[in-house]
Amino acid sequence: MDKALKTCFLLLMAIAPVFFCSCTAQETKKEKGKLLIVYLSRTNNTKQVAEIIQKEVGGDLVALELKDPYPENYDSIVAQVAEENESGYLPPLKTRIDNFNQYDVVFLGFPTWGMRLPPPMKSFLNKYNMSDKTVIPFNTNAGYGIGSSFKTVKEMCPNATILEGFSTKGGIERDGIYFVMEGDKKIKVKEEVVTWLRQIKFL
Image (cartoon, rainbow, N blue to C red; front, side, top):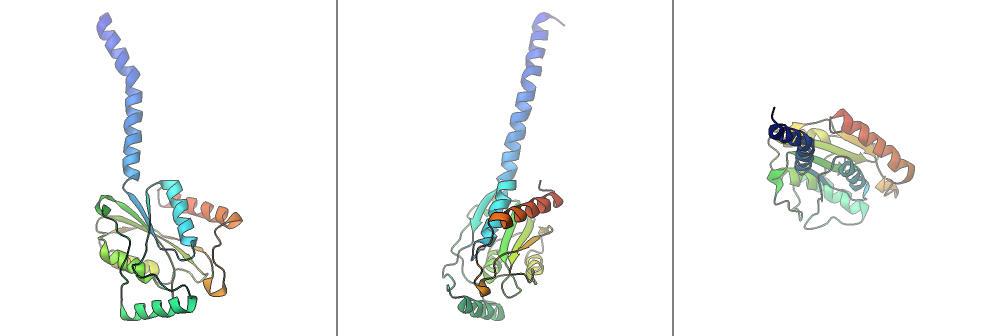
């Protein structure tokens, strides 16, 4: 190998690792840009879990808001949600996601309301097409579990890949226990979230 050719070869070998690392970083950033975390949170417990997920896997975080917010009074919202569930009414969303088609992965976060998927989350799933996307539910509840919420997500996303969901106990609004995701509770939930994300191969 002549001197000039050898010099070119050594130069290429020197910059190849830099080029490879740069491409890998860009690809990773691109993949995270295709990840969306949508959540509904009344007392901020589900919001906290959504933020923990975002810190671990990246992606865009979007809170679901209604055009006509629910009443603050607990008994009033329970009655309204029960009526919506009975009638099948889907409350209109204020939240808009104009670039939704760019996302391949959608985390869906919500509390359990009346042992069901909250009507606003049903509105979201009815409005946005989840076909060919990976959908991952996560939930907070008052201690009674997910009810039929995860099942409803599957039913409303028939052409999506649904991964194993996550659920944890949050506040108990009925008893005046609201935001609980702090201190030791927050640390414990973060550990549970990380374990779950590893199980579904996102970490």
